[in-house]
Image (cartoon, rainbow, N blue to C red; front, side, top):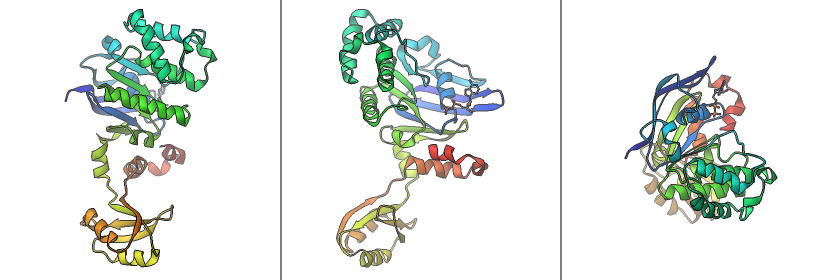
Length: 317
Ligand code: ADP
């Protein structure tokens, strides 16, 4: 598969802050990639370099085989800092942006009304941008990023400031655009957002890459080798029987009143699961998944100065 975005040893410093350091990345054509990391990790700086808004101090960077500046019509970009032409009407604004990106007015008009309907703002062409709520403005800005039907879509923190209903709507739109074949890169500091939708994850921390892989590979690599179960009958006898199954290391309680069955390294989870089922009826039993939050903490916990880092930075991730 061809790479859509390619970074080779890219670095960017602002005064004493090394915002991005020796960052190498390849985003394959057609992927839906989450660009993750806590606040201040260097995500926006990287995206701005990808968009040719700022220049890297070091390294090499290509987008769709060249420089983003010469490919703007093929790229959709939602910047982190939101801003609309406040006095403009929604239809006028989207038409203006679309024409700037080379789409003719006749194509734009029906496209704008269809999209406004899709984002639950039907018939709002004549509303002034400033009359819309923050969330609505953000959705209009998302449309401005995609109205020219770009093949590559780059969204910087697209979910921030959206309520759960609109976040879910945006999630669906992004997934649809991806299913139609577009390459999408979006940043977020909320890791579980990406977990639900991406096929690829790039995780950065303090300007350097700590993880870069497909979501399935990450799940396999960080498999916690744990089963979660809820016995249907008497809990303690079931627990004692399960503790005696070969391959079970330890059985503990989780926060939600279920049992966590930790497996020994050599154990086969499917075999242990069958053995557990033979010990008595269960309401549920399943293989636990490591969350991206846990992966992140396990990856950065080994870094030298983690103890000096403000707790909220880790919690924020
Ligand atoms: P993220 O998008 O992951 O939250 P940023 O790329 O915005 O992170 O910032 C990375 C680091 O670079 C932060 O320490 C930030 O303060 C610094 N930084 C970003 N842009 C500038 C700038 N224009 N001038 C000075 N420092 C900056």
